[in-house]
Length: 377
Ligand code: PLP
Image 1 (cartoon, rainbow, N blue to C red):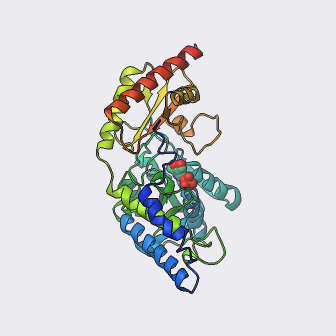
Image 2 (image 1 turned 90 degrees about the vertical axis):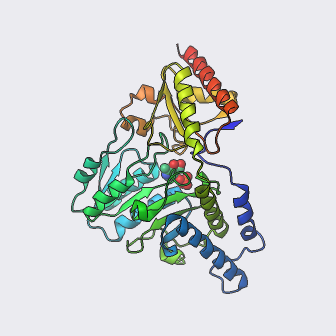
Image 3 (image 1 turned 45 degrees about the vertical axis):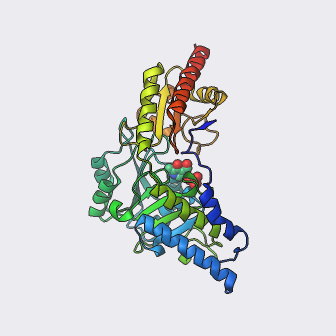
């Protein structure tokens, strides 16, 4: 089996599991307990927070542990918007993950917010002039994803931050797909809030972190025991936090420069051998491990099944919109015809591909697409 769906999730790395193990077994204390076992858990949590802060280039107090990307996005958007709004207006894009889109919709439905959803060009990039034009005196937050989960396009976050800050508006970015692949230093990026999720980087599902700049007020979504300085109540997932810190350090340390070459070789091989193949997303400003295509005259879901029969696991777009038959909102926003958008297939590589594997994948894609094209005709 060749697993090319790392944007959906990754296996827990052995080093990560080993780092977590003590806090799932002998050292199982509650960090709020006033005894040795509790203090040991609190120390592990503090250490994990410090290590994540070191990767993000922020203060440890600016890291809030969450249950993952969905919670981080919700906490950032609702939490910042509801805490001290300059007004009830948010700027975002049409290609965000559902966690962002739905959090914004919630603010519209229940709190009277208005949302400007910026379109993207054919490569999936937002227009900086449109960002500037969309910001109003009552805009309380700009939220734009760092890199797209379906097509991999990387947004010019630093420039978006410069525009928003000039107008006094904080910026959140969903860095769930960027984490482990791109620079996450929040000082260099300038963002005020950033979401990451463990299971995209070799940590378990159900743990993540939200960076929120110290001076940004944040209304909590979870009320209770006041953990995480009152920003996220609930007994902390100590082992998860340790796993996230370890995975983030390993992924950041081991950003593999050859992944871009592997990706580009796969893109070239598929475009060169598969009739009707077309790349989606930006040709170069894209995540190092993302190769995504449309295959005219097929159905993406049918191609996936054919690929799986040949031992290749990938995705028809976003695994997060589970069970949805709708064409991808991202591809539609990029101007693709809905029928073509239904033919999308995404390959996401985490650990490289040997030349033999690259050939195997290319052959499987060519044969799978041909098999489905025959069925469709
Ligand atoms: N944001 C993006 C860009 C994602 O790709 C995902 C998951 O695929 C999420 C948010 C949600 O993260 P989680 O699965 O940790 O809730």
